[in-house]
Length: 247
Image 1: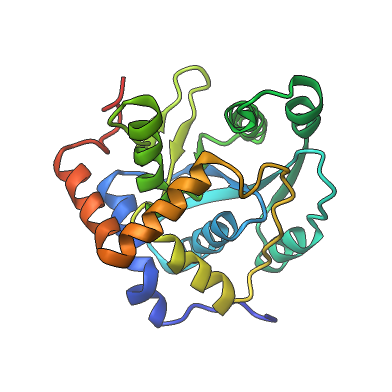
Image 2: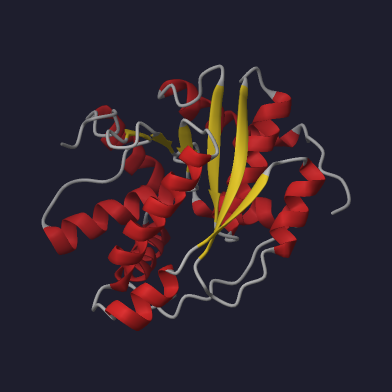
């Protein structure tokens, strides 16, 4: 797409729910500088576009910076960098050896856990160097439910992630502005606005326990279409999403 413009339909489609999550959990305050983690996938790219909309079409006052982690895969981030240039979003590419560490040197049975840990560290360190005080991730409502199922089925824990997490070691605050949106909404936004979405080159893509949970959620939603929203209502009413709930 040649130009990125605000559309009146955005409010009803997704933007009002993003704002509601941000205000309910006090995710963004005046003067914040937010590092937006972008992988090239539909969720994080949609988040970056939504942050641009919020910056230009809401009262929220903040600065932000896109950070792309180069894990060592043969991926060309040029479309994402070009997208950021068009929107005048600062873009930072952080080179890492995470891919080689996880799949060549360590070769662990559960590569996702190690990879996620290393990616979090690399993203947070880059955010601090850029002077950011917050990090925004593209986790959405489906991710919230899938994480709950992963913890319940495989770890025997009733837990999921929270919309706001204070990282004591770094002093950063992790925010997830998309928790009220199902993944299908973000996929629709990516298609509608022709956002730059790159293929996931990870060797474990599509073969993980999370992928099993994703299939399970789809199966349950086939019988109970509002299961995502009912799950969100239940855990919010129980106070599970309040910062610091999980110790």
